[in-house]
Length: 85
Image (cartoon, rainbow, N blue to C red; front, side, top):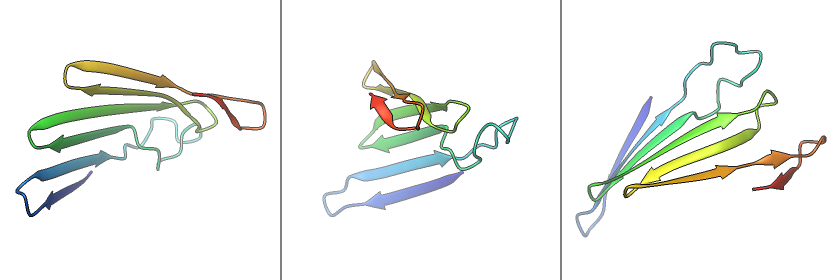
């Protein structure tokens, strides 16, 4: 886990935690794929979870922020090109 803390002249602070978790089956997932991100800015928390398909392509992003959940899904063609988001 890596944590970053920054301060600005106006007194706002930003903390970001980046999780790089080793998957149970490394042959199917790249160990460098981010699985979760937590951001805290001026007391507001934003949590994002990521999931990948068996080709290590981002498949789903679920973001929780200010009491709302936003989900983005991604689809790829046979050549690995992003075709919908």
